[in-house]
Length: 512
Image (cartoon, rainbow, N blue to C red; front, side):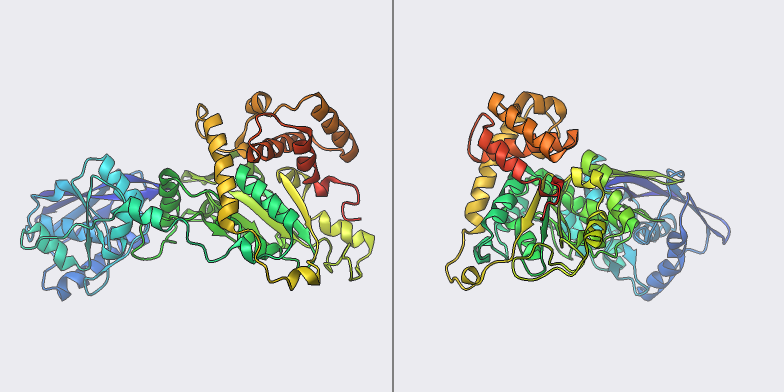
């Protein structure tokens, strides 16, 4: 007897439909074909135990199981449940009448309970695309998968529930998530606020400009001047995620297994701050079982690199291409996978190894060669891709002891959202471009051309600071954002002057 059960394989952040075909005939052998990895082959032992514990017998006939299409590698333990259902269907222990209407995925424990899987959201999207009536997944993944509308999602906790469901002995309750209500309710709740920050008005302004245009930013300053503290408050002024962005971000975190149990959509922009000992593969993604890296987990959010010169040079250099392309392509012998990687890079660093170069009260103990060597750890091409470079000086005592609260994140965020609305309207005819940082050369020529006075100012700055063509483009993009924050149609000389002031590291003796 030939039975077909349907599952899905996750590749990159998308899923592919997998048909599990089980043929039962006279004999007593078991064959599993269709490019399964070790974890899929081991499912045989888990299935035997799960069925025995729950009072069912493993079929003793000749069984051939094929996982089609056979050229896609099947990885992981999430195929346990569909394989078990297929085997029971082939031996006529359960009715196969409803198999074609449902997609089934789940990992089995030895006692028959069902463990959570990765990529449930991508699998649910594929199930809806393929026209399935429902999706059966582990209970812990049900809310995540139920985000997809026009699909019945059933969360199950044991194999017995699934067997009884297919035998029409039990009704399963579909999981319902009010996606929009939950999504919008959590968008404005942040633990950190800019109101707590004392002084540092110029840095707050730089962060506001970066948030408004999606620009990359680096902060240079002595230890304790507030670099990390301010970076961690950046998500509180970023514009809220749209539902489309949220869905894409949730898919990436789901595939990586980073979603908390019983969660649905991610409603706040991600903030990732990897340690400086991170490897290249952990940063960009990949591995023998390809997984998204930190740059993809920061998609639509912030990647914060604290103590930038302490990162391995090779790790920093792999960021150059994703910063331009906003995608990362991972090619291996067996496959090529593309992950989205549109993130804001925010970095911080000390000005020298001891940290006190150009400090107002403490003396630097480094010699000039050491300072230059420390700065040279960050390559010119990477610095070129950072639009805003700002120097932070320690806050004086009278500012620290001031009890008055600063401007709140909510009011800064209002201005940022307003500026982003202007940008969205401007680029609505250009798919994939939502903010000034993503402008192409053609759009720069159309929307970011300064007047005669501005061009003269820019020419002097280019000659004096010896800037590259890419730095020229970055200045124009930042000045366009500053103009948007002021609601100005034209880029004025004062907008350009502020944008040029954010190129601190391009100067000779920038901290001198």
